[in-house]
Length: 251
Image 1: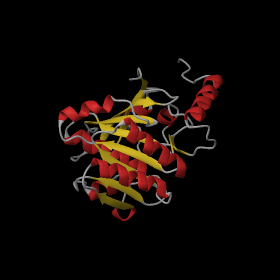
Image 2: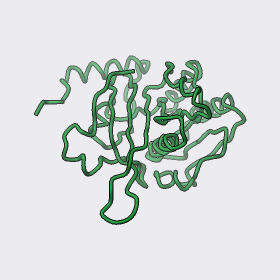
Image 3: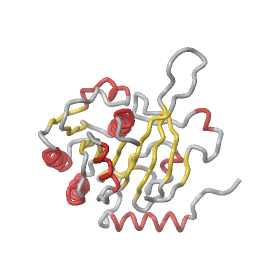
Image 4: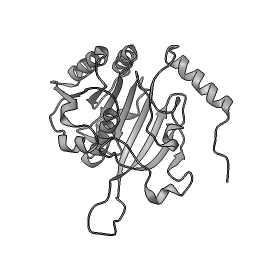
């Protein structure tokens, strides 16, 4: 079996690059996924707190968009404190977020008039310092706006999530543009595993880590967030080393 472990010197170099890219900050806290195959692709072994991360659906339709929203909810659910969720339209289904670990009493919804106002509210939330996470629902994320969110997150060690949602397919092309986010994720819905009895199994997602500063891009096939916000490796993939995580060319 090939040894997939990275050399210690390479890990040290990645950590040094991450410190340089974060402005020389030391001791950045991490939010691990708890899945070794995912965490080892991320510098520091998890999602960096005090940073901005981007999440989008694997397609422009509502099905993949809802998977992306639940993925973001699962991340926010594993932080400590209230979550500020900034939107332009009140179309979130609170019971679904609760199933991903984020109950209604932890979420503060802010409905802003347009995306410019959403970005301003999110920036204020990140600067507050008393929140566990700030979710920003936007179709477009200009570089300048993403830098402002990133810098605000760094000041308070609050995690920021830019959830990209599109009303028109043409808006999805903006997702490939450069931003200041530390990681970029794409989430697609997959068929659930068949159950031995009538019913629907736990949702399954293809999760693509498209971009990661000082880290590797990779694809994962995982089960959707449970009631504590945690992902899981499907039982039929547990005994297949490396099957649940596959390196990919960075894009």
